[in-house]
Length: 343
Ligand code: NAD
Ligand code: TYD
Image (cartoon, rainbow, N blue to C red; front, side, top):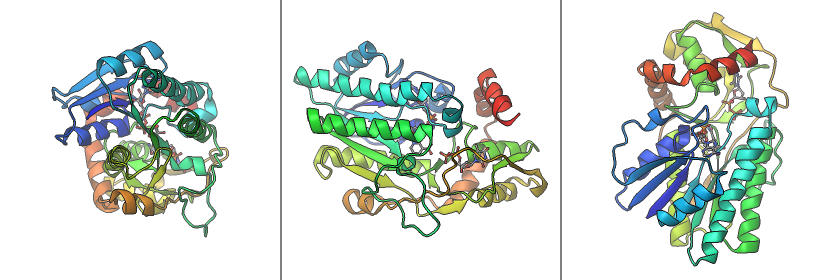
């Protein structure tokens, strides 16, 4: 199998690459990443595999994309490249439209151009539970049939990209499947997201900024379980267990309010409850996400394997024992964001 992964230097991308290189049916793995603020080549510094190639470039660059697809004889694209942080999309949606919508459009058109040359390139489009909107406290979990109802700018750009993929399946006959996953945690996550931000702040004696009442609920899944889900979707699309156009949800049946997560981090780091600071809520903050993943279990034989308490212990330990990584991602751009957003 010859794979192109987009956004492979990001959080989920680097774990997907490591999982893929553990398999011996992968002949080539090319990583196209623009190295935006959240893309970090150090996430793959130990990847010394001759099947792996890194290309510094953008999915929005049609020429680079098309030449990589042809030169490398790519059979399947795992598309993860994105602007991924909700708070940044509230601050400015423009980069989200450019990468998440227009970047996905570029990938679809490149696939179409290759199809016209007689090449078949499949696509796994990696999306999110946020496209389904927000659940009430007693609502059942989202399924693949839940109507799209994105409620923040990030989610709107992801839902748009999902619909564009569907449109290219329906009108141009491309082969694509879409994954939608709940909130990921684990090593290598950029410290603007809840768990790494709180872990580092807790260890450094700084305040822990909880939005609103801290009772918003997410269904937390370990990043390696999600990476396995992306590869299982690739297998399902290639061997016909999934038809083109199908969506698969991934979750961990692990719903938790934010404040419980912060308290877990306080316990694991030996920080103090007095570090908790309730701050102004995120505008339009979705109250609850929960993912039903029965389809992934039934069709792909996938299930989450990493238990939350072990996963969190290992994650906090990873941030504690990798100060060089933390230092390397805290660039000027990172400090500017923290200063602007948290004051
Ligand atoms: P991330 O922000 O850590 O990584 C994004 C990567 O994409 C970075 O390496 C960045 O350099 C790269 N990138 C950005 N723009 C690019 C461009 N134009 N061309 C090439 N590369 C570009 O994000 P993540 O958390 O790893 O998320 C990966 C994917 O998974 C995203 O599509 C996201 O929507 C989706 N997702 C994330 C979560 C989560 O909890 N983090 C949950 C469900 C789905
Ligand atoms: P985040 O990690 O940004 O993921 P998402 O918005 O995709 O769910 O946030 C997870 C939850 O944590 C979300 O409900 C917002 C909340 N949150 C805080 O309370 N404080 C913070 O500083 C951050 C970054 C998030």
